[in-house]
Length: 276
Image 1: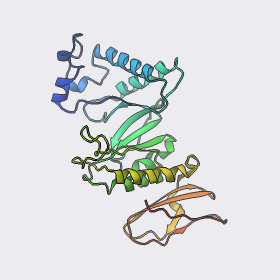
Image 2: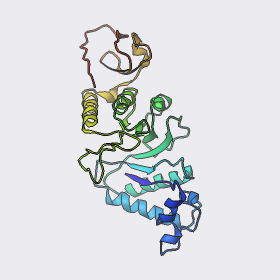
Image 3: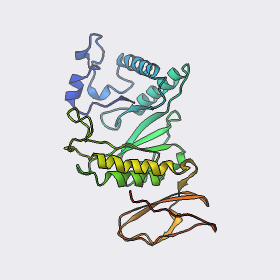
Image 4: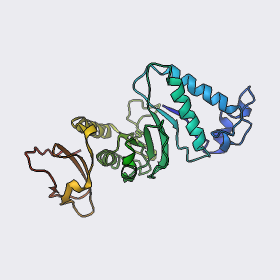
């Protein structure tokens, strides 16, 4: 559940209820790039009240987490404001039965996180292919998420492999934007005319990925590129998720034939090939 989003352009601010022109409270008489800062005057009190209300109302649900703000690195959203919103979530839930995870959107692509907020459990990245953000931040022992896909054309072909690539690199979340769902086609049959794919065929491919991950005790596994010693086809990449001596998951992206050599302890293993 995303709580806030930056004002990308002036037209969004002109239509926003946080703009003083659009509310009877007289709050928000500020430039759009100050709306999500601690310098936004009395608007902050209304934002805090909104967060408390939302967090309280959805507390009974166990199928969500809170993202502070979508793409805060666009439009002047400050870190201290994000920290304030995260603190409000924690304080509000301190007196409620359920405690939910908090997510922070870090960057488009990949970036090393410095001074992570201890209240945040999920760090979101958009368009994170290749999944370098995972290796850069795996040591935080937090969930690293591929939070938004797209901008690789309006076809399905990159979407499934991107998911396999990210999760087998040690990522925790793959959120695929499926543009085949529209108001005119709520059943997901619309031909995508957008910066991303979507179809029943793609959803079947992603179901295969989910079933594969569910077949693993993946919380005991960690990325280990050294597990693949040789045999990766020219121009291809290999990701390995490993619990040493017990379970190994390898994803090959690219190439037509692979004669893989894995570095395994002595023992008896069963090998399964999956064509996603």
